[in-house]
Image 1: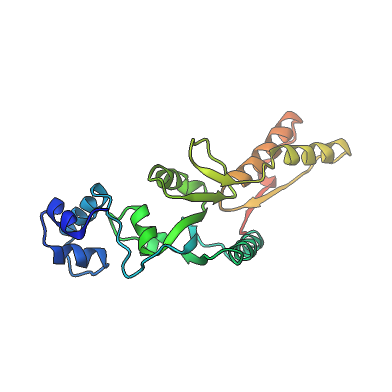
Image 2: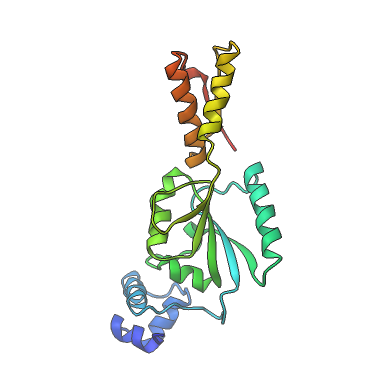
Length: 216
């Protein structure tokens, strides 16, 4: 594993400057901070900042926090139950707030003592999640699906069930059928809406005013 000395040599700065950057101190100029973090990535040096082991699993929200929703509450309950059977602790991280500018996501998680991440995201952060996978961050995404060779996810495919539900309502005579969906898009909610719209379009019944976007 690379040393602080090697990082300093690659960045062309002192060991003290490297130490201040890797410890999150704000007294270093932005240009030097970026050079040090880039050098640390090139050297594959990952700071632990006082932690000797990575013994946490992190629940990370890449977008808005929605821990109060029934879905997230149930997920957290399940995560806690599973973690209690392991030697790991659970952390909830705000990557947007805590990650230093220029710091790789792998370095960020190791600095936080995290060995793996469970990720909650919306459609707006799909690119960010794919970037995390390219950095080989060990992660599993909850509630979305990706056509990506190494990105693992845990996802309930509701397309067929949603289509069947709308077809059933039409078959028993209903013609004014609403769709209530989360106001934060993820793969599951998009699939539900597209199934609804597809069936309603086929039946000539789709109405834009019957689609309602509501908080989780």
